[in-house]
Amino acid sequence: MCLAIPALVKSIEGQEAGVELGGMSRKISILLTPEVKVGDYVLLHTGYAINVIDEEDAMETLELLAEMAVLEDEIEE
Amino acid sequence: MRFIDEFRNAELAKVVIERIHRRSKRHIRLMEFCGGHTVTILKHGIRQLLPPTVEMLSGPGCPVCVTANADLDKAIALAREPGVIITTFGDMLKVPGSYSSLQKVRADGAAVKVVYSTLDALQIAKENPEKAVVFIGIGFETTAPTIAASILQAEEEGIKNYYVLSMHKLCPPVIKALLDSGEVKLDGLICPGHVSAIIGSHPWEFAARDYGIGCVVSGFEPLDVLQSVEMLVEQLEKGEPKVEIAYRRGVRPEGNLRAQELMNAVFELSPANWRGIGVVPESGLRLRKEYQRFDAELSFDIDPGPPLEPKGCLCGDVLRGVKTPIDCKLFGGACTPEHPVGPCMVSSEGSCASYYHYGTL
Image (cartoon, rainbow over all chains, first blue to last red; front, side):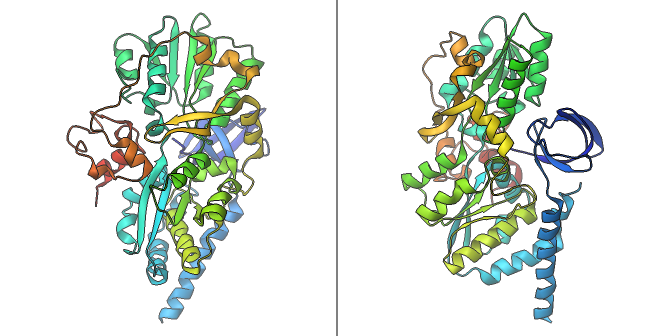
């Protein structure tokens, strides 16, 4: 019910955006995310973008997990 | 898909699991509030991968499941009204109320349409000006702003035949009610990611401050959930429960201010009736006075009759985390996703449906 999936914003017209998700295109409302820009990923929930995904934070989370993995390997060796 | 595949990396997951095993010493009980998290945990076998010191409990975070029969019956009664078209998310269709379901009344001739979005419901209202189009408003803070947006749009465009049956519910107040009941002893909470995308992480502070419960806001991929479990283990081993965000790509501490603004403009707090939990003060949303002409309950004179509970169904206990689906005698026999007795078996994120689909070990 609270499912939201990442969608790439391809175009913006007023309060509507064209997005691509999993190879499909559709129109969504960006009323809740006025700050969104073309090229951003948004969290799409029931036809509305509910947040802009922070790419930097996503990468940092992954890097942190990966760095910790490297450290683990070194400790084990 | 981007931001999904990376968070399903099995190699990284293995490392996180090993770390959890090494770090976890004391026995802890964690509740994943959200049904979406329950699905991730069961689908990927996360419970079996965790050390025996980490116990996981499913919570009441399934909007369809927590809708009380008294409210469901109103939706079904509205569907029977002449000249009404019901628009609803698909999850609600098969949920049995006291006497019937939306699916059954549709088979009997009622106009019930499944929509993906309130935007579709508004379109149906525009195309059918001679009918009253009622949207069944269920959902938590994630969904409520989209319903608010639809009401504001209906007002702006002068759509006069659009109504909402508001049964929206709020997550932090029900967690507080569960904790106050004393029925469930918790050490940590995996907080719902997309609810928190709207409300932020601050509304969970009370749980850490007043109840000593660790809170981590989690995303929905397996790596997200594992990272959240690890953060909770770390907090609890140190004896420092606090509120943290693991799902940083989707959640800011302050939440989505625009969405909060729209939600507050249209709705005000009200008591809400939760299945298995009862009426919790200030845990629901009703339309503000200025928007009451969109309120389906006030606009139609319906009599759904007294609510009845299905015999033997433990859905309410499962939602409170005091029973698991396998404790229920009906589970898998008299109650299956094809022939559900209670809503926890209907919704794809209901605990019973998750246990049924992904195993019960």
